[in-house]
Image (cartoon, rainbow, N blue to C red; front, side, top):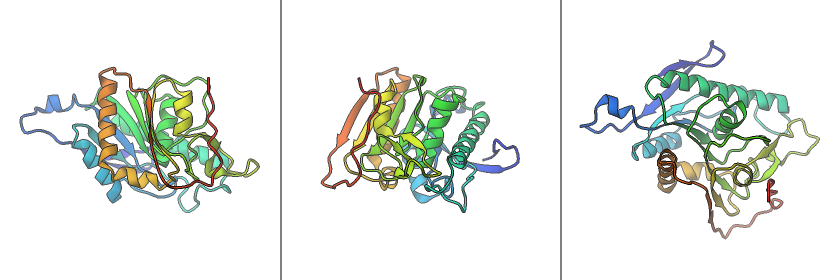
Length: 267
């Protein structure tokens, strides 16, 4: 499907994955939950139709969850997202992707009037977190973040969050730290809170922490059937008003050279 970006000038694409049972009427099919997925790529590359993204979306659809995988404007194309990129440019890129997510949902809303979840991988998770918790522009039932993060927030809404994150992620911090662990005086010193910090700061978070895993976890999760199953269960639990809170830690023999993650909001 095509849809217009939030700038009303850029045409974007989305793919919708749905496993409709033969005996299932169209009306009943649209009562199923919808997960809107945003790909990774640092806001300068990536696409919804990368094989790993397709694999994840197909797996999740196989659990009875409809999935809309969207492209969004990549404001940092040919520039990157490193420490030399200004925080203003980084924020603009995140904001644009979040606004495009809002546009995509407005197109899908007539078919899915309720039970919409949002999320993504890496940069896509950044955008979904920003839309749900900072912009508050989407009435989402829940958010799924694979190695994503967002800027600290004083008063966060109670939207449930499922977060996957490696504790040794040098690009997107697990706890609270600068993006890419940039120096505090660098142009791109953007303070972020990753999955570990979210579990401390947000009221309804389910955390899956991978000890000493780095940002390569993003690709591993997309191809992991256990991850898609966990996502499907999270969605069903949210719809069933189950308590989704809790932390699962996955052991590892790897070592980590990063500083111990700082987890704010501890009580």
